[in-house]
Length: 201
Image (tube, rainbow, N blue to C red; front, top):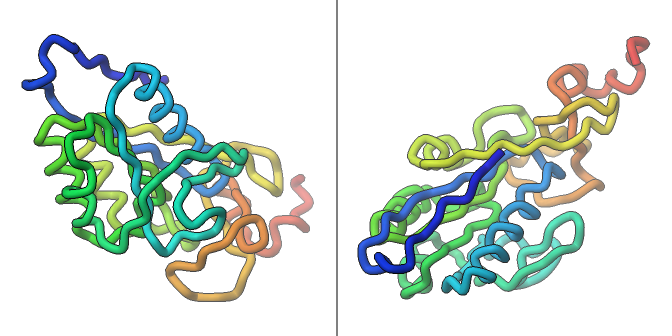
């Protein structure tokens, strides 16, 4: 279980920053957990700012929206470098769909944490081939806290950590929801199209 670190209000000017990474497959609740942590920071009256890649317009032009339809205001950016200036004097910075940011996002998160900010990052740890996705391995390596969340396999009902693409497209980035992807456990992911016909289920 993730225990949220505590900010000592009396030492605001010299507080230590850190990075938290929330990772997992599609439909595992990454954005939901990001929103939960941001809302708790709001309750604590901390200054927050949330960012997402401008290319992700699946649910809303600006808001980040979870699969459970919870949403929170964010700023779409084309480059991760924009985040440094836009985060201003906020105490907590949230990033959703981090795998879609350019490679500069690693240095950006490091810089923000070094200036005393709490940086909360959510993203897919693996792509549709089951390979490490974008900048996520580097972000997980430099983070103080890493939380891996899981979905439910749409074939067998076991714990799922893979995003199985239903489309035949070979594009690395293919935005979609249940029309293009489903969560799968390791076994059903490796079985591919034959998973539904496997007599073991």
